[in-house]
Amino acid sequence: MSSTVAYIGLGSNQGDRPANLDRAAGALAVVPGIMLRRRAPVYETAPLGYTDQDWFLNTVVEVETTLPARELLERMLEIERQLGRERGERWGLRVIDLDLLLFGAERIAEPGLLVPHPRLSERAFVVVPLADLRPELDLPDGGQASVLARRLVREQRLHRYAGDAGRPE
Image (cartoon, rainbow, N blue to C red; front, side, top):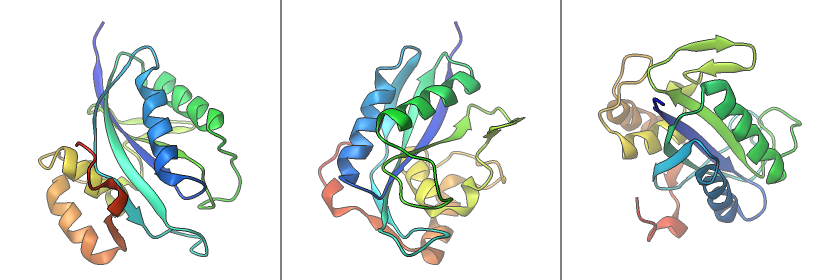
């Protein structure tokens, strides 16, 4: 069975944020058909949209999967529910948020599933960790992850999370 390399963004700004990211990454790693390959460093980022809330912790994981994109997304939504995610206000508080950023080189536009993630190239909190994992990665807008990351860190509030200093990359 063929496999696809996919990138998933993880974010949390409610509760024990580092533990929420760890639980989500751990839950992804035990799903049949998903192999967690690498995890980027964690960044602390200012909230977007609704800004009167706690800052987020964000990271990106690289997975290799034999699941089709839709099924991968369904497993991700299931993990969100298991970890206590309640869908409410857009850009609101989140125990955990999992976003399918890239699924190989595929472009998918289906109800409830847009890949590459439509705002990927606008968000430092996903581009910077992506660049940590694969600096040479060509993003959907045609730019290279490392080049776009350097630009976005000048425009958006984000810093490497101090509690992540010893995490292997």
